[in-house]
Amino acid sequence: MTRILHILDHSLPMHSGYTFRTRAILRAQQGLGLEVRGITGQRHVEPGPSVETVDGLIFHRTPGKAEGPTGVKEWREIQALADAIVALAGEWRPDILHAHSPALNGLAALRAGKKLGIPVVYEIRAFWEDAAVGNLTGRQGSLKYRFTRHLENIAVRGADAVMTICEGLKADLVSRGFAADKIGIMPNGVDLTTFGEPAQRDEALAQKLGIEQGPVIGFIGSFYDYEGLDDLIAAMPMLVERHEGAHLLLVGGGPMDADLRAQAAASPVSQRIHFTGRVPHAEVERYYALTDIMAYPRKKSRLTDLVTPLKPLEANAQMQLVAASDVGGHRELIRDGETGVLFAPDDPAACAAALADLVDAKGDWDAIRTAARAHVRTNHDWARNAQRYQVVYLRLLGESDDGRIPAAA
Image (cartoon, rainbow, N blue to C red; front, top):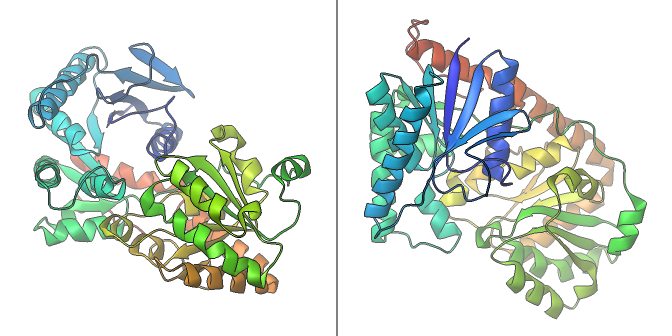
């Protein structure tokens, strides 16, 4: 049985879009008959044993915490993770090292792979220098930004195969001079065994939250600046003008939480804006079931133009209507007017108009929901998409003559 060791920034039991994608990948690969494990670097900060089984998946941890100035600290992290990979390979010999961004993981995998004689796949979920800008923890063009980009280039250059989650990331790498046929695409997906049939509306929960009426606009996710939730809150008075029963349900938390709550409290329709705080992942479906339209008003930036988000796909799998800003990452997922609607980014009026128009088009809702779920099932179901990895693995193990990396369908 082929063994794949996934090299990760962090993993379950921590909850994030990163860990949920990892879980879906590993489960799907198990379903294909592969033997899989994960190993995390020193940035996995959740307390726990050195070897941990979560949801039937085995994760190994890298001990210690790297110290030192920028540059030195990162190289120490890389070496610690590389050493941990080599040590693990002594007892559980993997056939492939499959590293996932950030580049520190890719570089650790390259060091370990060279020592062990094992091929390396490097998968990019986002450019972390752009993510730092989007999270307001970095500045585009800064020394740290350029350093992170340089590390990414080294990892891409050294890997035996490269995967990205979308066309935007691949196109950016090709523009840097990397060969297109070295880079495949493994799009974001949904584990339809987890997001199966939509939950029934919980009237008691709706009453508790004060949203018995409708329509209800929802957002479930992390409250980062680039998500544009300030524009969504600003759009609410205009939406209420056209649909006086409208409510906004914001589920989650994050760095912008306090600012968003203050903005909502000052809104003339503050009584129609509801925050739940973070909820257990197992409870998310209950909140999807309370909404009529899920809104994703991401601001326009390098990050949002290049990277496809996961949440709209989860919403589609739950038979939810989706309205999203017209940025590159959303355009790869949503066919405007068919599987959802797109509106101009950074424009609360455009957001309000799109939401109000979609509410008015209630007769089209079933067709849009059905088309969106069919799109997810055909193009973004992990059980099907994970087979693309098989093509890459077989080539690297010398079991296939096809030298090309599979692109997305």
